[in-house]
Each structure stands twice: as structure tokens, then as C-alpha cells.
Image 1: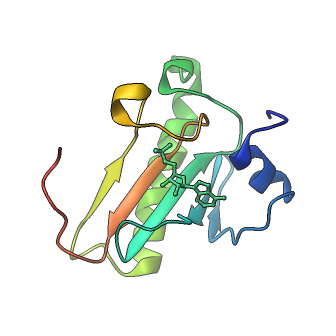
Image 2: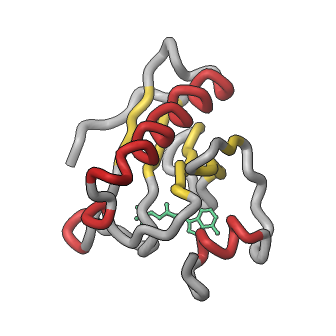
Length: 114
Ligand code: AMP
């Protein structure tokens, strides 16, 4: 946990946000500024600033994040049509929130990767 981190604050219930899914390692919320009809954030409950911190001993957390993505895609009805999972890592990727998270984007035909 990190005192000032927005996603840690959401996890602690200090910032209101609807958690639509939770498992042992992570939770899922809707992005506050959605870039697609379905735009979810899959967030590890423990604080990792970057993917760099998710060394092999944390592999079960990565597995739980992918499983959460699979479950919420089903929940949101985008499994069959398809969706995209994205991790923005660091400056060149435009990472805004310094707490590792995975975006799930779907609900429309997505543009190319840029
Ligand atoms: P990234 O560029 O990968 O760091 O993306 C951070 C994402 O978090 C952006 O898409 C923001 O819109 C989203 N975001 C920031 N604050 C909140 C919040 N309080 N609740 C939901 N989404 C948020």
C-alpha cells in the first residue's frame, strides 16, 4: 500500500469507486475517462509502481490479473466480439498513474496500435 496512491486509496475505500470484480490479488474498476464503451482497469491490490516490480515470485498475481480480465470480459459481454488488454509502462507509454494496472478495452472495433 502506498499512502498517496489513487488506486491504493480506492482499494482502501478512501476514494469512492465501484469495484466490479475482486479476487485474491486484484480488483477491477471502470476507467473514469473511458476510451471505449467498455474500459476497465485491472489493478493489483498490492502496490507495484511498474511492471518492473512484478518479479517471478509475484507470478500468481499476474495470473490472477489475467483471470480477472477473462471474468470481467464475460461479465461485460465482450468475450466473443473481442477486446484489448494494455499495460502502459513508464513515460514513453504515457503511464499516468504510478500503480501498475492493466486496461481492458472493448465494446467497439478498436483502432490500430500506435
Ligand atoms: P495509465 O495511462 O495507463 O496510467 O492510465 C491511468 C488511467 O487511470 C487513465 O485512463 C485514467 O482515466 C484512469 N483513472 C485515473 N484516476 C481514476 C479514478 N479515480 N478512477 C478510475 N479511473 C481513473
